[in-house]
Length: 192
Image (cartoon, rainbow, N blue to C red; front, side):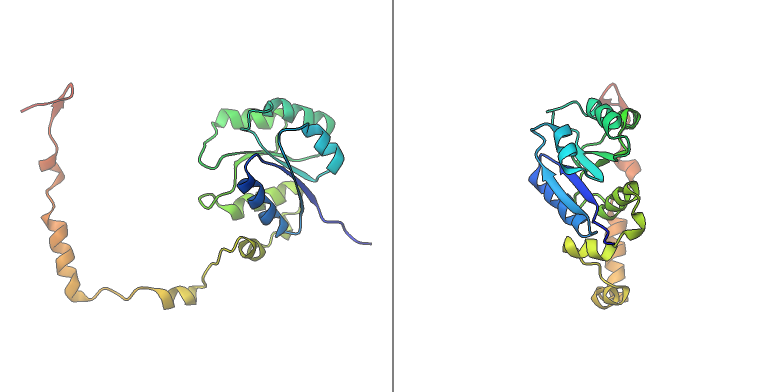
């Protein structure tokens, strides 16, 4: 008996986001199918029968909350993850409302600023396969190298020589104090 690999349906308007999700999930042995958000989303689900659905909620081409309700009604066991641009924050009320409507989670898209490891682990956990998470395979697929502690020590800058410390202390002490720089203000004007 062979186990088929899980399928993730990724619907992202940004080619960069679609590629990042494909690389990250593919490194975990998940078959990734990418589709455009411009067509009928429910048709994609019935055609591909995914194990998880990752959809950008900010395209403006559909109502993400209505889509969550439709998915919950037709595919109640399918984890639906709504994403948004990494630089955008989603209000807590909007996240709660999406989850109430049927989303499994609302998370930022992948970027170097967002912890990719946590996002991918969360997706795998929602799929019920969190124990198969392979962080080294993920880092390798994204070409991210994490130096070992021994390598960090070898590449560490040399320690500061003691004769350099007085110069640093003199510069720090030569700055004016914050009390001398602050003025009392009244209605936006300095007060004597």
